[in-house]
Image (cartoon, rainbow, N blue to C red; front, side, top):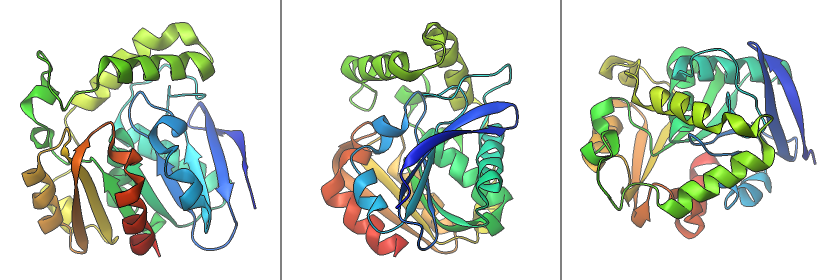
Length: 252
């Protein structure tokens, strides 16, 4: 069993990561959502996932224990950091489970580094900005799809508890917002060229339009789609009763 945490020097970052589970089989990389930490994104599912495999869970630029650096926060940068971490750990190929911003990061690894990806789980992940509902792209009114005040409080407290510079939160939030709303770097042909078997997962009250997820399912050659009922963006990774059986079957 390997369970612990460390920092790796990658692309100018001191990237925090955790290792869980046994050393047998193909590793699973968990990539958390924007403004979240490993625990906030995956606390509910991590113990079960680590019971039968090695799990590698990094915290991306500026998130959690990983200090921000003077660099734009972009999906290609984040994906490059994750690949560099795998290089540091001597991992040639892994399965990926990415949630939200982590899903975008995992998708970029799948598109640009197909040889590094075994199976791909993209949770609440779009490939064009119009995949999001308008009230998510331009949040000017209350919507059940958006994080609640309690969700934001949880994010704020998690950041304050572990960030190297707790006073950096507002600037960090602005960088996350810019990354979330930047044009996404893929085309339909990129999805048609995805080599990895892919499981798309979203909630029925998620940021992401179900029609967009269905379009992605049709574009990716070996893809399947699961829409979880009565599930928002923020509750998606906590629906262990529905998620874990699907993940175990898909990841094998």
